[in-house]
Length: 338
Image (cartoon, rainbow, N blue to C red):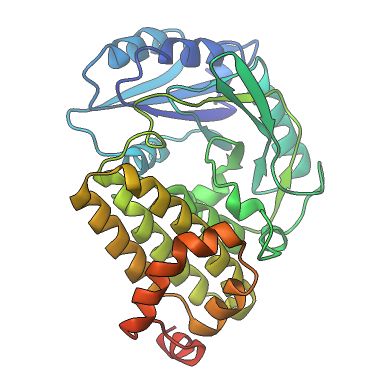
C-alpha cells in the first residue's frame, strides 16, 4: 500500500450535525483514497461524532480514530493527531468545516514544487447562506519567502494575525523540528503562540491559491460563540507569545507588533466579557490587566499613540488600573528579564 501524501488531523467534539459533510469532502481530494491518511480525534463527544468518524474511516486505507472519554481541548487533541502523521505533509481540519474537491491534491503538489516548510491559503467564511472570501494578508502569491518577512508592519494585519491552523498545509520537517505542536492545555487562542513560532523559526513559506476551505461561522458550540471560562486562556496564550518574541534575537524588531496585537485582542475580549457572568467578567479583566502589565513600557506607549479611538476607549480603564499599580515594565526591564 502506498504511503499517504498527506495526513489530515481532524479533532471534533459534538460535531455530529456537520462532520458528515466534513468527512465526505475528504473523499473527494484525490482519485486514490490511499493518498490521504485520516487521523480523527473524538474529543469527548456525547453525540454521534465518533460513530460517523468510524464509519468514514472504513473508506480510507489509512485511518485512525482516537477516542478521548473526556474532552481534552483542541490544542491537546491536535497534538494527539500529530503523533500519527505519515507521509511528507499534514494539515488540520475542524469538525464543522469542509473543503472543496481536490484542495489537498493542489496543496500537496504545490508544497512539493515550491519546496518550502509550509503553505497558507485564503478561506471562505460561511454564515447561513452567505459566503465571504477572506484573503491571507500577504501581498505576494506563489512566491517562496521568509516567514519572518511576513510579520510586520506592526500596525497592519499580517500573517501572524491570520493564525488559522486549517488554512494551509505543512511539511513534516516542521514536526521533526518541534514547530508543529500546540501549547498543551490552552482551550482558546491556542493558535496564537503556534503561528508566532512558525513565523519566527520556520525557514520558508508561501501563500498560494487553491480550492477553498469553507469555515462555518455562528455554530453555537464554537469557542468563538461561547462565553465560558475557556475564554480566559486568551491572556495566557498572549503572555506566551510575548515570551516567545522576547527570547528571539530580533525581539526589539518584533515587540511593537506583539504589543499592537495584544492591545487589539484585549479590547475585543473586554467587549466580549460584558456578556459573561460577573465572576467570569472579573476574571477576564484581571487576566487582561496582568497581560498588559507584561508588555514592555516603551513599546506600549508607542503603539498607544497610534491606536484607533474605539480601542483606546475600551482599554482606557484597564490601562489606568495597570499603571496605577505600577505593573507596566520599562523596556530596560524587559530586556533584563529576557
